[in-house]
Image 1: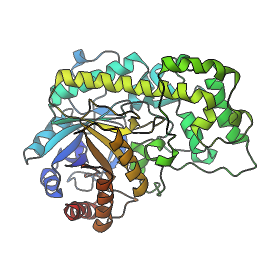
Image 2 (image 1 turned 180 degrees about the vertical axis):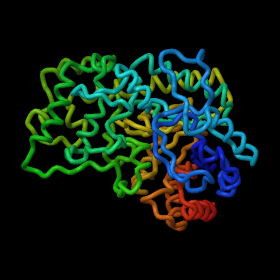
Image 3 (image 1 turned 30 degrees about the vertical axis):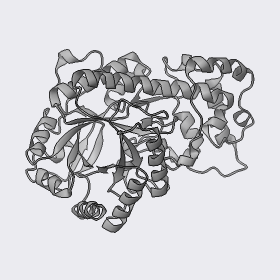
Image 4 (image 1 turned 60 degrees about the vertical axis):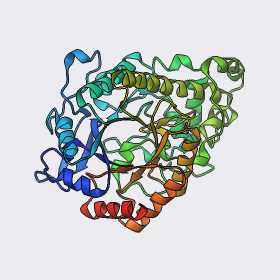
Amino acid sequence: MNVAYLYPWDVVGDPSAPGRLADLGVQTVALAAMYHSTRAATPYHPAHRVLDVPYPAFYLPIRPSSWSRLVPATPTWTSADAYLQARDALKAVGLQVHAWTVLTHNSHLGSAHPDLVVRNAFGDPYPYALCPAHEDVIEYCEHLVQEILEVAEPDGLILEACGPMGFGHQSVHEKTSGADWTPADIDLLSLCFCTSCAPLYPEPTRATVRAAIDATTATTTTPATTPAPSTTDTTASTTMNDAMGARDIRNISDITPSTPTTPSTASTASTAAESTPPTTAMNGTNPATIEDALGSLANEVRAIRVAQSATLRRRLIAVARRTAPNVPITLHANPDPWATGAFAPLPEGEPQADVLVANCWGDPTTDAARLAHLKTLAIPDQRIGAYVLALPPRPADPEVLADQLRTYAKAGATEFHLYHAGLASPHRLSALAQALRLHA
């Protein structure tokens, strides 16, 4: 199955959009029902060419009685029922419509409720990142899923950012690259020490993280390298950086193959950890990985992080199954237990989901390894999807794109999730349609 990702404003007000999507060679559209802020090109729309979306919004009518403390915002740049209008237009040409749902990535709610956001070991808040360790955040996500299923009545549900966001984010005029933080530093800066998370970790965790990060700043004997989220040049596409965290496209070889322990079984290790902090951080050297930096604390911290994502995921799946038992559920997932961002950590799989989708925006060989890893976590009949980029820095070349599709299919992908049918130029969209035909 081929799935094209789309925003409601790509369809609302553009009567040619449904036919263009049907001609692309897809069977399904992933239509954003809840989405973060962005600045989007609209190369096809008859009324505009650039749309500024200043805050995250819910593209369905908001029923006040359905929400508790956290209530999503209504858009002003398109109609309040934009999802419903776009859904009906797309279904009229025979396309299925899945509700693309961004969960914990919400700068509007994070700014309004700073007590609920991710905070790093230095106490710095990430306003775009709602922390799933807070019950209010989990309940908001539950309400979001239920409302989408009841009001939108989608053919499928796609869950993105179903876990913690981390350091990686395309902020307004991002100015962080000059700090020369390493990939391990980025992972450490992605650990949350909010009021709910901090008490869960063994006592020396915060100090260990701070020391490891500051060791990078203090080290002058070895030139530091700027962490890059991909082996390709991502500076050409702000949408790439905005949609995913750094670990979403980390090389699969960076993942330490270890079985996460549960917080209860890991607790016995924390006593020894308190008296033996990791030497790399304390000696002022640069740890190669987050495991090196955390040392004997790594297993317990990792288990806590994985458990938080698992709790959110399973509660949302339970709500979805109660509300719409026959609607298939797709997870944007990463087998890396330290993952943050759009593709949440899924190191042990999720048998209750119908489709597991891995990010494929980096080096195709690395992408294929991630897909293959995710495939090993899948149960029989569970489908694997490849989230394929059709925007820069990918070339608008159908042969190159088709070759990448073949690589992902060999790694286990049975679905191609195509980003993005509204942002791609006519030339790029044509190349993508040709690549789908060549692969078929």
